[in-house]
Image (cartoon, rainbow, N blue to C red; front, side, top):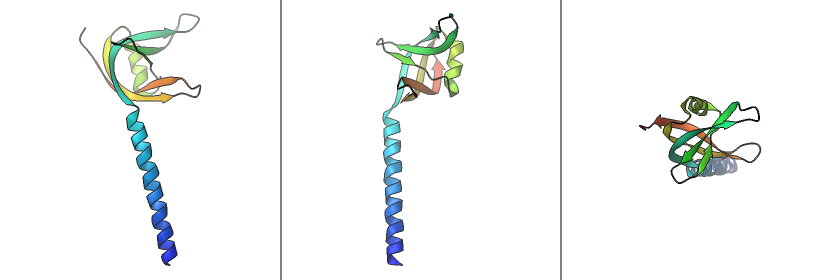
Length: 105
């Protein structure tokens, strides 16, 4: 009986530790950037996505998931965007937008 309780306690502690590490890692990749929304085109000049050019010259390619799609209607507008930097299946770093606001010109 004591072994079962001990094993359950150890398992719960390991799950808690793993969960805490995951949250910490995710928060580390949470960024807020301010910049101009720029259209990304394919070979046929069709808009296929957007990027945010920040004031310091960095570019953040925006994931087309969730609120990222909404930025496609804001090309050439200044925004403040908050999201997670994550790698897509090809290893390209993308900004997955959690929230944004359009800024005055």
